[in-house]
Length: 505
Image 1 (tube, rainbow, N blue to C red):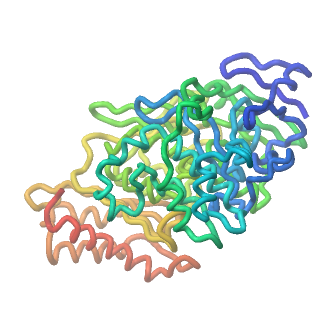
Image 2 (cartoon, helix red, strand yellow):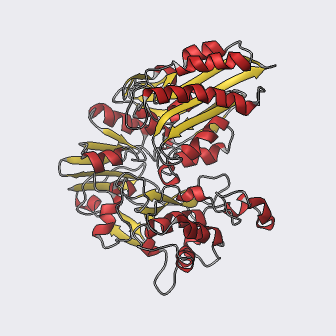
């Protein structure tokens, strides 16, 4: 094994001296990265070192038993420099955290002095077998330390929260725990513990840690067992590496690749990490368009946009769980070209374009022209999605419908996104994006044509809904039948009309 590790932007060292520099800070103690392959997960690496609080439950990011905290740059406006972010340790390769800071459940408290989250869970009966508890503790701690939590809800108006089951009077957002499953305790005592939490006191070391920036991403090169991991220092270096190694797999949040590694035995010969490339992490809201860096996590995009794009604001809570959104990126979701990726239908309805960057420069591709077949696209092997562009102004009437086996943290059976402009009760412009009904995400072009110029009401809407029900080529599988998918398409437009009450808000 050889390892090269220097701060991003510097020159890689060589030989044994470089190998000595790779490692993580875990619970305040530096631990070297030794004897690891590029596919070793954070979970396996931690457990091999005796930190067995994190557990493997599902190995695909759906149960949260493996959750840990990572120090990341603050993602909210005017947030402290560092934010404690909960991620699934079972999905992320440990090499992707070279130089970073990690906190596990063992690092939050001690048997003699419990962390406030642990204390509340213990007092309110929030643990029985305890298998899932460390993951709950870490996910709950991330929300405990979230900057601005106190501002979400005013404690002086608790009566206003009687009908809000997803937020506590302390501002705790239960969506923070949507990726954590418990099979024996039941969720009421866990919810009670979350809603009973106060705020970090002045002496809390993890709260104080937020005041200084997190470690910068390192330029890392590692080779072991015939496989390699590289974190390039720049976009130019990344695309040159992809041109030299077309078989390389791009790594961002690893929420998709981690499943392939864990459950399907995938072992890419080369992983190229792009999640911290500055060129892929910009968010700009201009007069004519919004530019979203492809390597920003969905949580970062959600907080950065702060509701400016209502259709995306509808998407985010339904896109897997907070643990997944803390790692998943728009670039990764689109790069897989999956027909059931949740972001694509929304971005199709928004008429988004993609900027693809390669060794020869940039090119812009309309998302509607990006997909070429099942999990294939026009993106070349040496290109990266650099940013997603959403044109302005936005449509006046938008809606996103996702139907899945369970409400949150599940793959969609059907996803439909609408973006309509209504003027005096007439549809003057319509864009409809669909997922789960064809080999690729698609625009419902015949439905758009039927809606344009139509009076928004009565029989006309019913006719357009019937057209929508005939779009695509849905299949029957274990998630839904083709007839069910067509019925969902049709009902989604009728539901949108009922919600707008024939108006156009």
